[in-house]
Image 1: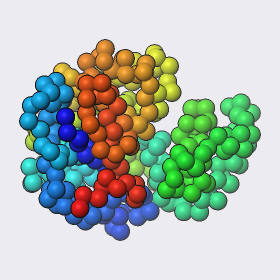
Image 2 (image 1 turned 30 degrees about the vertical axis):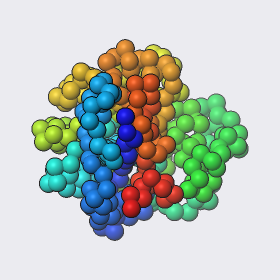
Image 3 (image 1 turned 90 degrees about the vertical axis):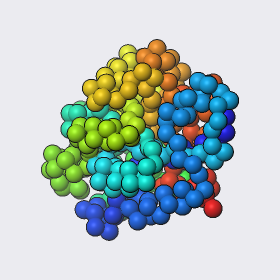
Length: 318
């Protein structure tokens, strides 16, 4: 099978007119330009065509194929992305998490993003985090802050300063979950300062948006229940996440006969892959790694191109 440029998007918005112009996203104008340019060099394909090629190798497939994917179920995927793709008859795959869409709960990952978008002083943020870890050390049986900070490596994300990487990773995965939740909520309330219900309504698509997009030919897959690090969970929690994800897609009216997964943070392990196989998942995407060559042996670890990474030469379609 030929390689496929599986392109990964998150935030796509008019940043200058956004409530949070500091969010790390792609300007709507730049997105449109990118789509028109990609259309000159690639043939856009849908997830269904990749699955067909995996199941029936040798069938005709474009020499230069591209699949557009959009994670996290943001409202701008409906208001900015969908109208353009629909008008150009370009297929795409969307991967919303369950809890933000159905339960209307803000994801911790998004709270962290918008804390960083609202306060650009990384030293100040890390000082705030340090004080909060010390404050809640006894309540949550935490280690000294430096113990968490020393685990973070710059190589994890070479495009951010170490202070930013440390702030994000400690709040995303290093602290115990109850402490993470407490500290993130406190920082979000103080620094972002918006009512959480308003934040959720502005940020995430609702069910009726997804159903309309499905009706118009867009593909929807799973992105977990809680948008957490699935590869770090025990098997029972992984099973819960996968089953909730599959049931969510069925509830929306999406096809669950060979459904597709996008791993939050690109995080997975062999245990998770085994559960996905047993629950009729047919394909899964990681986060980074460049152009993919989908093959039956790697169908649960298909790599993507991140449009936010400035040095990813695969994005240079010229």
